[in-house]
Image (cartoon, rainbow, N blue to C red; front, top):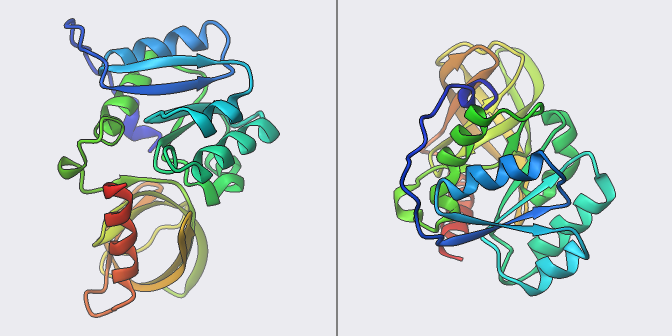
Length: 236
């Protein structure tokens, strides 16, 4: 996810009417201005929230929420408030700063994407562009869900821990330092938000530096649990 979002994206000069709101929690300048500019570029209205963020997320509707992962206690309170709120349980959560390992401590809240520090405008625009359809509720055009959770991966005689990047009903992409062979049979195990831990058979469908794609075994009926979760995510 890191390298995938580092290329320059040329923004449109046309202002678009805001169709969604993004809560920017506790940011100071210049981070706030950078984030605001990126979301406005795609018709998403940034809302600065500096006081009582957890209460705001319980009471107000937001399509996205952006928070600093370094502020562990406050960030966890906000994510808990959002995910337990009926109106914000499926809002797109963006983390700022920290590594994928840091984000794993919040795995149960389903962080969707990460802005890596130092914040750089081209990479930020690329990330918002890649996830905007979820924020704008154009779900039918988005068949993959960007979400970060810890995944146990067993195959090629190894057992390792990976991090999910994107997920669909047919497979998922993973960030891992291990090099798995294309075509290798693997077992994966993960839990996510309202999805209890699921174990699935899969096959490695592609292999890139520090990332792999796996395709769920079509004969493994446990994959329907993932499909049901994705359908629920898109419909709520």
